[in-house]
Image 1 (cartoon, helix red, strand yellow):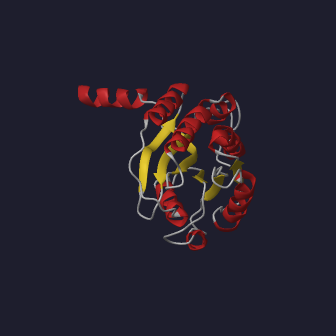
Image 2 (cartoon, rainbow, N blue to C red):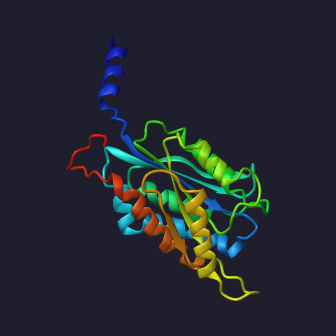
Image 3 (cartoon, rainbow, N blue to C red):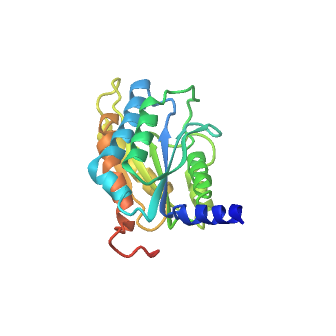
Length: 240
């Protein structure tokens, strides 16, 4: 009897599991076109973006319905590395831990190719592990077009009924050998991602003119992605 009472007390005292209002998987391009400095700008830029006041406020706006984050790197077909497996974000301390993890992540050897379609499929598989979340979003960053593996067009077609949103963040990189072509490259990549990558209602592409602008572009992107399901603690917490 005493054991039964103790078990019941534990159940009563245990906090109720929060609902998940959004699962957000972020895929970062680490293919051969991304050098070591650009790699750090990407990782540190994401870490800083998660700490930005408006982004943090949107993530933490409703303690009863949290946001879950996952981060992975991608390059060629079959080469994806999960940096952060699914983590529920319920406090500023959680965001601090995630940002610290990103800041302390070091680059590992990766193939040179750019398999955008494979990254889409891998991100979708990650999101499939969060079926209870109200919204599931893949946030795919890249500075180049597909050059091997399944074409993004085919990946997009295969994911039409997956119930996920795919947004893009394209980086117009400067080429010292041929002058500054960031605007041209960003425009071409933006059109490419709009045609073959992004998926779902209200899907969009954000643009960074060089990796130096990655942090600001990620802030804009996260604010927009997280803005559609903001339900405050004081408001209605019913599923939309």
